[in-house]
View 1 (cartoon, rainbow, N blue to C red):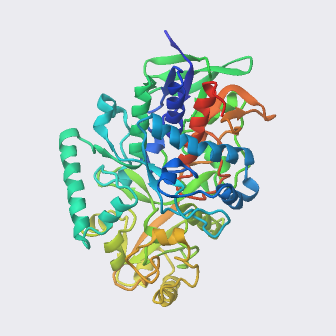
View 2: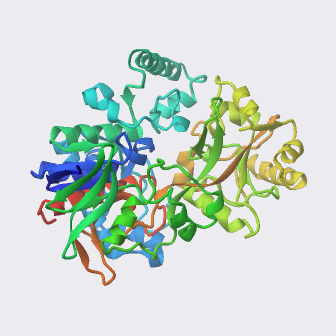
View 3: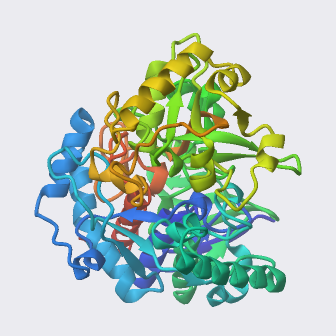
Length: 562
């Protein structure tokens, strides 16, 4: 027989948005059930870098950052243009500081400030030069007790032997391990502890990045009696007289009907693996590689539409884009690596098949893919190659190939890296125009020797300079490609997740065709149309709104008005 359960609020999905909604509602006395399609908790959030964009937050304010009133709104308006949604932006900017303050005061989710992380487009009005981002503090996994078995493990491609490395001082220590005794000691201690944890527990126990965020949210949910049901996929919503009053779940033992007195929050992770919806909304979907967890197949959007909601068509772009390379592991499995850090370092360029550069490689990852798509003719495959010399790859690595002292040979054997003695030979091996690549490198080297990028201006903004190497001058983002041999990795369009979710109002309520709320139905995270309008104005603009609108949804469902 089908199982039936009753609760106050059902949350479909266990990423940042879903867990935030669950914790807030449970904190206010609601009985909450979280239904997760996968057998583990965390969704794509658990694979993420974990940074959270939340202008005006109290953690950064305590660190000495004073947010100028109205600046963040002016910045978002300048970035988004015609895609600017004043209601959503106002709701986000008002609630984001409250969200950070609530979790910091009341839960196990504690934060570290990002005091020196500038917004991407620092030339625009209202751009922040730091202090708009936070990240979850590292977390000792033993704090989850038996529930640790439910935590999704870090992404294989972006961790090292299962160990997460956090952007900032932690990453810098690993990048300078052969050049600074203090870094070597730090890395030795981190590695020793990690190897001990692997031997004793079979996994890393010092959690950072998105894994720490999910673990802390899980701890907070469990502390408040939230029921976590893994292996339960959203099969459909239950409605009465046009209102959502529950849902049907596909569980391991059959269908479960959930009656939810206060409604349902959709936070299923968007539609990055919904082939039909991607074909209808993505540019050049045939070569797109999603970085989201495989369970994100559009369940929330389909359920929301069946209940009267609608997917947005008003955004500048459908997804949070990122350049990626395809990884073939020795065991035969395949993966996807996001090129977030390497593009901004001095001594690398990105080129097309004609051998020519097409963008400023040091801008945001979303911008790199947007430029690649724009530069690729309709009858050609959108692909590029990151090109570097031997000095670069040994100092910084390239893609999943790590810097010295880790070896290059495994990735050369696997075909992930291509190596040649000259730019022309490298081009022929990759299928790039040899004369075009040689001319591009010669032109780039000429200005790079002066610390300049005459073609695209790399290293001319605070954001770009942060992505570079502070030990390299005069421009931390620019250096010649001069030391043979030369290396290349093929890079194609990818994405962290989708932007084009369900249309909502500022209370995270799903809206029907006439703009009226569907009673009892909320959406947050990537099931909700992005407040960023399809743009990527800063790092953390996926998790910041996910947590904030999850917070808003949980608060509204509990009957508390902002």
